[in-house]
Image (cartoon, rainbow, N blue to C red):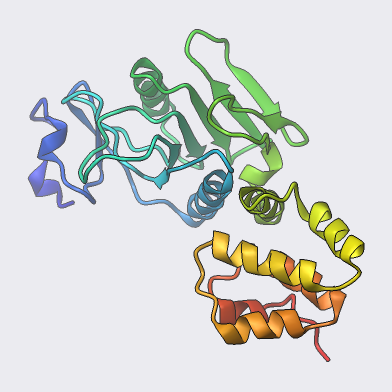
Length: 266
């Protein structure tokens, strides 16, 4: 937004005075400027959103979604999980789970206020992912002492996420993609990648792997044409099929699947 629309030394303001795209949040009607994210913030932010959105029990995930549980409050967590539904405009409830990525230049006072606002309005968990210093995630919950989890540990969100989240997956894209693959397969009834491999071994043919790739692509909302189905089901190279299965977790298009680094060069 242009700074001429909202002067921080006036107010207090209401959430309905802000519009989509404005770089302000509100706490008790007072504006807090939110700067654009830098590279070290934006990349993990996108990774975390894809990771949480893939969980089999999650129905809605937002990036910088605006929550306004009362007229003087507007908060936009970096990533959030909430119940689906509602019309356009600000979301009138608090998110179930909020994730904040704390990078260089983080205003700690503003962060503490934001956490308090979210928890005070009904958010069950706030995860603060520390991008500076030792890799760790701080877990905030109403009425609970702060907990800190490091690399090698798991985060759980009972009643929100079905699966635990490795701390490493909130920092590292490769680690996140392993979890996303598992989650997307679970959405289609597979326990995980090993279950698909076992299905292929039991059937003694490659259709199991090909069908798993098609299932994963469909779960990600990609359009699958007849030529793609024929190509996958006609491939008898199990190594190539397994490689495409991994690529299916991140390919942005079906064409990108076959052009990915996972394609076996012959």
